Length: 319
Image (cartoon, helix red, strand yellow):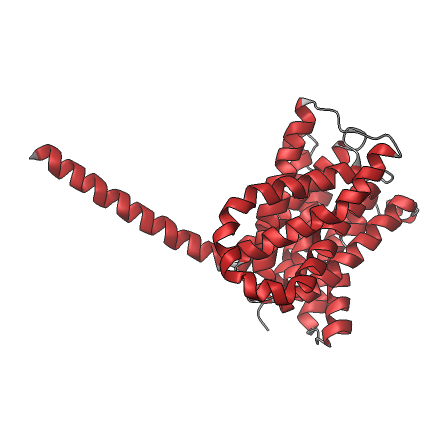
């Protein structure tokens, strides 16, 4: 009798725990600020890893394998929704493919290629142009009107980025010169700005259906390019422990999880307010360098962090 009661209580506790987890997950999925902060954290890791992988994994191969593995991981979860969303996909497949190509395939391939030819400092500065380019794209394409807090907050957070990447020495910025890697990354940021602006027109399909189609389009876009990279330029992936771990990370965190967070964040608060969270990427990158690489924490870090957080808070406020 006692054993039966214990089993019944255990079952009730398990049911309660499951309900609580579902409610917490639901609240998290509706919290744009949490989602976009996680997005910035995952993409900061992608920046660090993309630079570390330069010379180890060819850039197009890294992008192709990233999206291919992400597609395979998501496919079992997407299958039930694909069947239900097929009528909409059949009508909107060109637009969904367009979003996948510019938002994943082209953007990340260009970013990985650029990281082979430029420094981490230049890359961080150029990535900080993302929120500004997103705002410009939203204004030009959809005639959005920017509020004064959005403009001021973007400029404040960008100032924080520049303080961190220049290590508090403005003359460092004056010595920067653009090379082909910088131009490639800047073009990639312009592409992702267009992608972010057009996300508002995402078809009414389940989010996992959209992510799978986007990942698949990104992988297919890179397929002919990676074949050229391998058989024309002779660049192949070396199967080492580092490459395996790197591919596992980029396939899950900056791909599946980050794009889920970003897509939902834009859906909740719009492209301009969501784009400002890209300024958290260099902040998280600096924190990773401090915690993982043992770099000292300087006053310029503190000043930059405060400016970035203040700018993000100001810009992301609901109008």
